Length: 231
Image 1 (tube, rainbow, N blue to C red):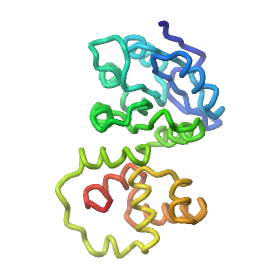
Image 2 (image 1 turned 60 degrees about the horizontal axis):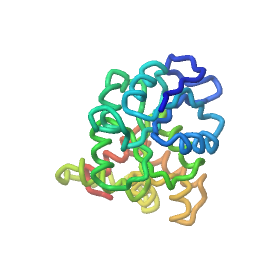
Image 3 (image 1 turned 90 degrees about the horizontal axis):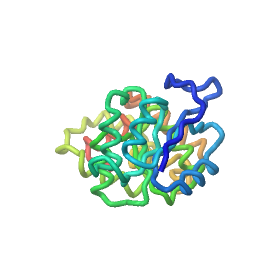
Image 4 (image 1 turned 90 degrees about the vertical axis):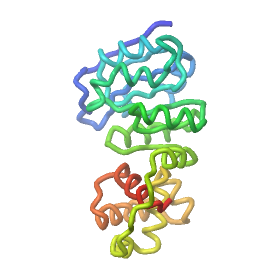
């Protein structure tokens, strides 16, 4: 296998058009090719790799904003995606890792999140959904396929915290429903479908929830909800 580096500015910053620079790490070249073809033009693939060693080298060279990272990879010491993240630890402040794997096993999800990944989606996810996940991770959110979020909450949840009545009283019944789904990793589209409301209405509710709870991102919302066992 060989790694690939394509044109990129190498400075880890987003393009003026809102594009996001990405490295794809997967040991199947045909999957990488198919994924590139399915991604939105805003996702600029600046490098590829198929092994642990290649991935670390390419990521260090390209310094992308997001790495789409398979969990199981050949090479290295057998640590797969976790080993790649560890090898790029110095970049974690500017490069975010989004696990993309065929595996939906709890141990794989938890292990790569513990290593420093900002999310985990499965390969059954569509190109449009992966594009959305990349953009959200680049913006600071944590993103999970809906059924995988529970693994993370179970692994990282703490003892139930006291919930101040006024915190929940700030939210309407509908806002509370939206908050729970968003915190579990649902996309706006999935929340809209689940609650039979429009995506625009979901966006309005999410903005209201973040404002009322004085939170700034979905990642903070997920943490807030998990600490209070509201999911």
